[in-house]
Length: 271
Ligand SMILES: [Zn+2]
Ligand SMILES: [Zn+2]
Image 1: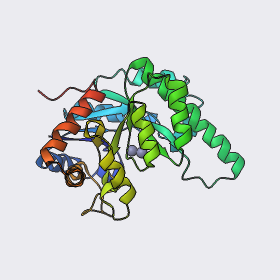
Image 2: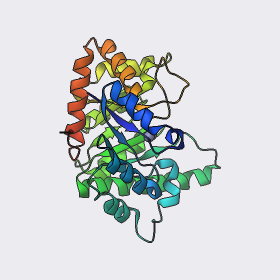
Image 3: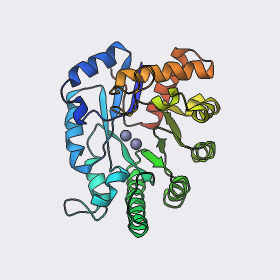
Image 4: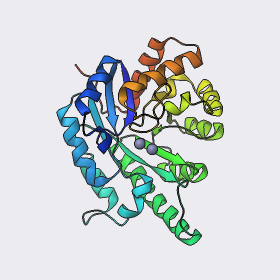
């Protein structure tokens, strides 16, 4: 089986037909999926979904786009304490998605600096939670390579582990992530026509450090590009990766699944 290591099954795009989406995942050999939290207020909905479906795991965390609304605490407690409390649920296997995203920002420069520093404090609390709980980080980073690595080194103190999800950064960032012991997850972007640089990076990253994901409902891989993405399409990215690296599909399937369980060690294979 293959695992979709990052999707958002609670997003409204899946409300009308989640059962059919899960059935198509099963038909395509996607045996498990990790549905990733972006707003703390939705963490319990994800946990309810994971309780209902044995093949679904979930995470706890605040997306950098939402960091400003949570950085001063949530429901009367600090972000750190809230994450730690919500992560006690048995199917929460990771912390995130968290990180830094300096790409979408139309605010004036001074507001921008304060928004960035709020992202950094939210990211720092996630890193601390991840270390305290021994659960891996699910990192989202865009146009913020240097600050992301600095936070992981300074706050992580060599103890932080996790995955750079939906990787679309530079070869230098990939190397730094690998040096820190992190995994790299490739999404449908790998199949996009203009992604030559990313394909080169995927060729160089060793298979024992790779995960695959959809980031559904976004970023559907070729040949579904432009449509709603869904976990079944993880297969397209994995097939593409196998061809790119000159490997069999089953090698990619086996190794990325082993990698998933090695990193997300609170997740157990289905009996
Ligand atoms: Zn993301
Ligand atoms: Zn995501």
